[in-house]
Image (cartoon, rainbow, N blue to C red; front, side, top):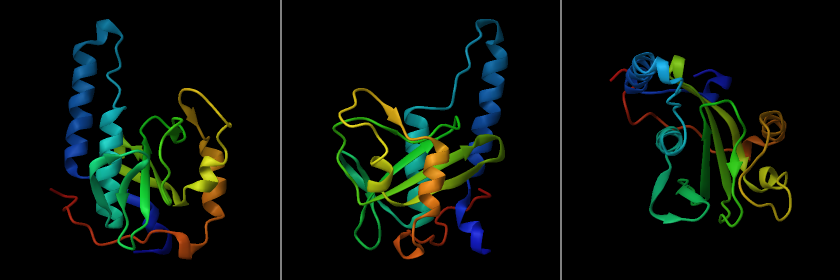
Length: 166
């Protein structure tokens, strides 16, 4: 694996099949102008599964506010993901994790790109104080923050558990 390859994660072929089925569904209902976007809970779950597989995370079996998983070294991890090219979204009252993994999905290519891999606090520091609803940190800001993360603070990639060709 090349130095920068750790940022690219191949998704299972099932994602390509889902994208193809999505295109057929959109075409079948084209007169409705509905987009049937691949977002919401689906993207969140796929993000958690992808991050768990790529970084050796143990997903929480019981819902824990603001924490989706634990890293092999015990750090709590929040996973955020987008399939629409927007920054990670946060809501007030969420618990806090030690670490944040932010994935950007390219569904057409069945790839995920790691947009952020580091401590969660620096990203959360860019949210407005006492906000209501859902707020995002912009992708340019997330990339800037990621560039400042020391390698020793990043989670390391592990061997794939699933076969990306299956």
